Length: 144
Image (tube, rainbow, N blue to C red):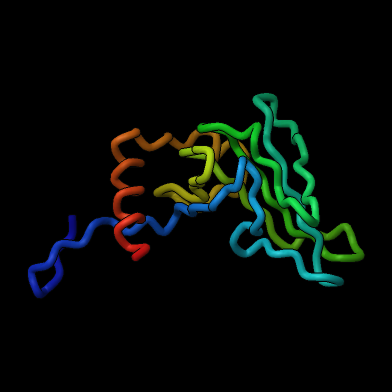
């Protein structure tokens, strides 16, 4: 814990973790910074297999991303491409650190930086259950 000048305690900020709300395992929102913009970009989402191959997850205009097959420890890859060319704009890998029926908690960076490759995401340690519970508790207290 860090201390501020006015003697109030502040816990570590979780800037490298994102939480997404699921509805029956389906994500109706886009991942942060990977929003689809008509005539500007294309977005690809894939679950990475143990062999490093991609299993693409399609976006359904009325449903969203079906993430029912995603579990703790899985790696998701997001890629943003130009609309009419095969040129990549951005990509990132997410490590799923918690998955419940209504919530997906992903980590996109560790101490050494963002997960720009599959191996970086794969080698990153999973937080313990206690750390995840603490994070969820802090998250629930800030929502009000």
